[in-house]
Image (cartoon, one colour):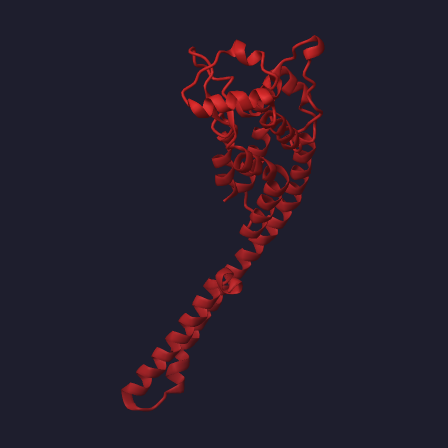
Length: 258
C-alpha cells in the first residue's frame, strides 16, 4: 500500500495506457470484425511515447527532489545537533532571576537545569507542593469555595511558596527556550525536504525536545495552584497549572509537528 501511495502517478499512467489500448482494440474490432495491426500501431505508438516521456520527466524530477532533500538533510542534522547543544546550556541563572531569591535561611536553591531536563525538576517541585501540609490546607479551602481569593502576602508565608514560584516561572515566561525549537520546526516545514525526511526530523524534535513538555502539560497540568503571577488587584485566585500558562505552546508545537 505504501508503494501505491507514493507512486500513484506511475500507476495511473499505466492504467491509462492500458485503457487506451483496450478502447482502440474494441473500436477496431467493432468496425469490421478484423484487427488491423498497422492502424493499431499508428495510434498506440505516439500515445505510448507521450506517456513514456511524461513518466521519465516525473521520475527525473522526483530523483532531483530526493537528491536536494538528501543534501539539505545533512545540513539540518548539523542544525539539529547545534540546537541540542543550545538547549543543553544551563537556564538556572535565568530561572533564578525570574523566581528571585529570599536571602538568609529562606534562600531557595534553584537546581542545575537546562531546557531538556527542566521537567524533572518541575515534577519534583510539584510532588513537594502536593504533599505539603500548608498546600493541603489551602487546597482543601479552595475545594470548599472555588471563588476563594488570598493575598500575596499570605502566600509569602506558606511553606510551599518558593516551590510554587519555581513551577509557575515556566508557565509565565518561555523559560525553556521555546523560540529556538519553534524556529527549527519552521525551517523544517518551509524547506524542500521530501515528506519522509520532514517526518524524520519532526520525530527527532518531538522525541528529544518536546515529549517531556507534552507529558508535563497533559499528566501534571491538572494540578490546582494559586495563580501567584496573576494581575488581579483583588488578590490571588486558583487555577490549574495548565491554565496558568504552561500549555501556551502546546497547540502551536503540535500544529508545527503535523
